[in-house]
Length: 460
Image: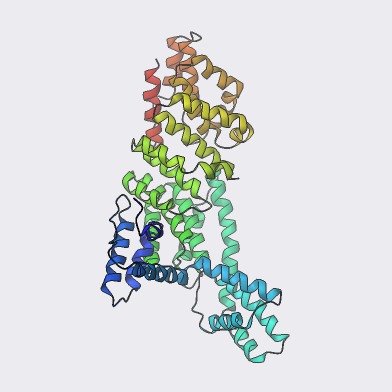
């Protein structure tokens, strides 16, 4: 039966724990009834796998008023909303279409500005354009207001711009290190850390510094330093600083990755579920990461149900790296649930549609899942044929240099050839024993290696 408060429930189910924590700290309700509802909303948000129903005996207008209050409070501190407003004002100034009431709001924002705002650079550039707009219209008083602002914060703006440009140089080294371990990125750690903790720097630069520090932490397996900075950011979010739903979702997604490295799978799954509570550009990526955690927890059916939620986004996304990753993990979920024929058909469908893209993006992940589905059906000739037709051994030789390499395809091929009588037991064990000492400090990769060894042993 549909609840009388269904719209309110849907609204509160989209809220995030840091949002409700901020609202609890900010509220000054005299009405105890509203405060109790807010506390219940917070409790439901914190405890994501349970739901305590709201009292339908309370006047629906109370719930409606509370919903409006929550929306207004969060919108007032939302940096993405602020950025949208800045962009709209800039467009109207540049096209001479700004209204008097909009100018009043802009002038008030300039006079009441508190440094540094998250999108400070963008706001500064807006004021630059507005100053030109005012001077040509001989509005000296308002022009002086904008001119004073620009002079006061000129040094801060130039420093922020310089930092932003330098971040790009840092990013090149960091991403290249991630792509090829022969490069280095640790040289940027100190500078990025200084920027992250610099309270006079704008929020955008500080947050961008954190994302790059996160990359460096994963590049060098320095996870302790990442947690320390995330804990700092956690407190900032609770105070309403640097808030937007987009940034919170991104924060939860990153915390999943960190906790997974510490083998804290329950915490990783908790943040994973929070990361998919609201859909954004990276929703499919967060969904796939949560799936990987659930598979490690042996929650196979739950993982499959989660992946089904991303079917629409998987069809429409233009990010092939994310799309192929989603497809591969969907196949893995079907395999884990022992739906091997379905997994094979699903893989074959996408291989026909995206053969070029699969061979370019995450091919090892895709074919490992695909071949597993075929192997589990004991279709050994097909395993050999798929490897030959897609020239996987050629690609495998290049892939072996990666630190996280798993010999999945080599082992599947050896097992299939052994079962078909192409090679003997001696040749089979030579292939398997070549990697007998393989181990990973990464818990996720070690889990996959153990699973692979178990699977291979079933077929020999």
